[in-house]
Image (tube, rainbow, N blue to C red; front, side):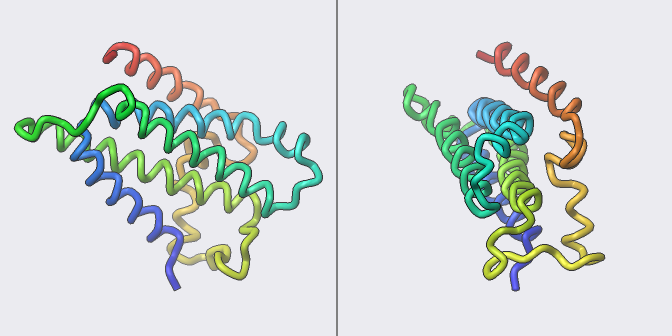
Length: 175
């Protein structure tokens, strides 16, 4: 059986390679979009749960997942639409910083999906089960992006709010 934590780290590795190819500026913009959509879903979670009160946990997870994935897809395609492409192959430093930013993006994407599964109590039990109590994957729940940035499922999202402001400031300075 594959652990959810393995999925998160594989996404981080995949997006790290993608970040190396794209460069740090494009990955920085993607990071901003990912953090913003994660922040929006976190802040409006109670609103979604009251609006979609007839939804069961599977439908609520799919709604959160689809909104998240669509926005992630759009932020990764935004620079491609505007004429951006791959980075200059001669600049290794830009590639390495891009790889770090891409790995962070993969971690944010995988960790956010895992968070959606966790707050909806693992709705697809026949395919994905909650980690066993005390297992290595269970111990990793505390380092999911939303757990430490948002303060957990019941947190206020203070650190995430500050992170959003910092990322928006950095992105505005690089444009």
